[in-house]
Amino acid sequence: MKVLHNGEEVETAEGTILNDFLRKIGYRRVMVKLNGEQIPASKFKETILSEGDEVIAKRISGGG
Image (cartoon, rainbow, N blue to C red; front, side, top):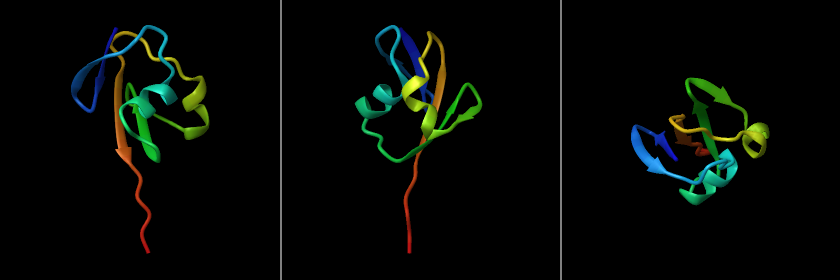
């Protein structure tokens, strides 16, 4: 199936879990919006992506 990731079309398997998708593309600490709605990290493992979903992911960096 196809989803949009930061504006680019990406192919992924049907039923892909958001957490697995993020790891596959190399994200660890990240803020995510799925179809315009912010998804808390506690929900990454239970959120299933669907055909045409739009995933916006931004890395979180700590500073000091």
